[in-house]
Image 1 (cartoon, rainbow, N blue to C red):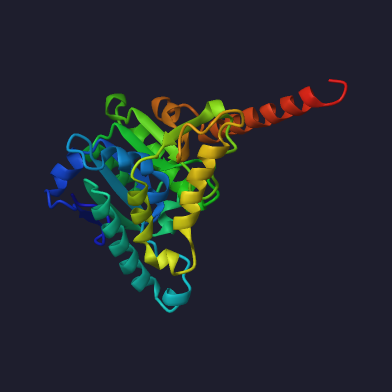
Image 2 (image 1 turned 90 degrees about the vertical axis):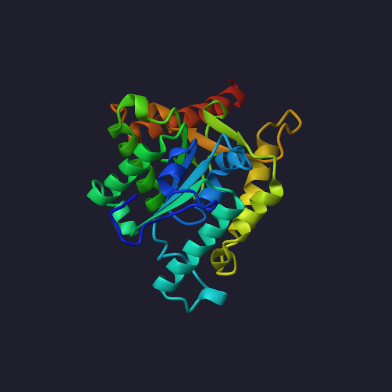
Length: 285
């Protein structure tokens, strides 16, 4: 496949031809940065691991040049960081037995620019080639601008497809700002109890982030365990590790839905639940 930027690349860990690798995709993860998928799309990665009938394809939209760095990586230039982060992502794709990993290599500024033709064209080409059953991307309540921008561009690309070619399930996943605040009925619960060693390995290969000053490996594992334990106050744990998601499928099925209004409804339901509990337990209620 050809994409808009010369630095773009389709990496196929098992050596299959790129078009064939993308065509076998069942689960697709589209994320902003290197290591985002390992944080947010563990469900899809694990569901496809060591399978021949299900394949996870990862997509990194940006080039990763603006990542935080310190300690061993404090003197790395943006170009050097891009090269390191690409290599780390390839390691994760190999360890996780991805069907393919696509590096689109767009600058964040382009992704955050609504209507950028190159970003739109690349995402459209990917979705046309992969035809995933399940699609993971960022959630619309994330606090990272580039993450939300990627989610919006992905939704726009899905909506541009004929209805029969759109993914059947689209999940907005947590990275920057988790989704524990959602009402329980609104949470997409993704149990990732299995292969805890593999999950640790997938996070651990991103040395430039971990030794560069961000312990994403420990924070991610802790968040998954905390979600499982704090999910229910009056019952024993049914899972050891949980990831929360936001269902974005209605936004893909109905292009007339406004993304901001859609997320605002989640917030209003949460506010209503909190208010009702306080009123119900207040003196004189």
